[in-house]
Image 1 (spheres, one colour):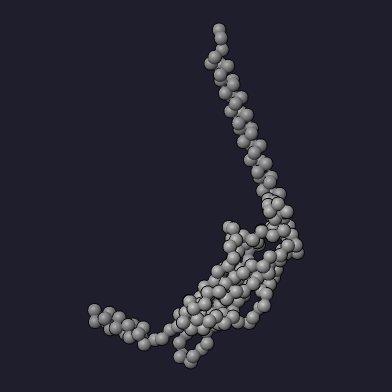
Image 2 (cartoon, one colour):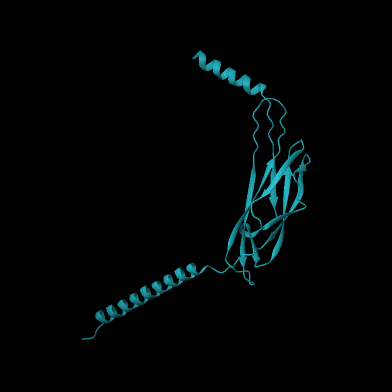
Length: 184
């Protein structure tokens, strides 16, 4: 039992004497219905994201974007976020990919990584990556993404099958009603 108390005491002292930095970091983006940006082939759209620093200290972050058809306008190597700021704006220019066809869908992921300087404390630093994503759907001029051909075929097969089942039910129903209500 004494070993258990010693271990807990040692752990408590270790936690009290260690200094750690915890970063609060946030990101918000323009509203997208169903988190989906709808673009026609060849169209482009500028999306705003807002970097947020609720902490009392400056934070430097690095922004990475997953897709080559998304460009960061006024891209910086690092973004310096002042304390208690919620409106550092970054513009993402999303252009419909060259190979895109109506109905295609892409997921764009962007991530923010705080840059932590080594203060020579001998402690292990952790970089936390904040990742967000949104979908890009290629649509026609009416804003509708056509379903791929295989989805259309499945829908057609289901409709034909349902029609046949309903026809068989009505046919059996008519035969049964004639049988039961047959005049003698």
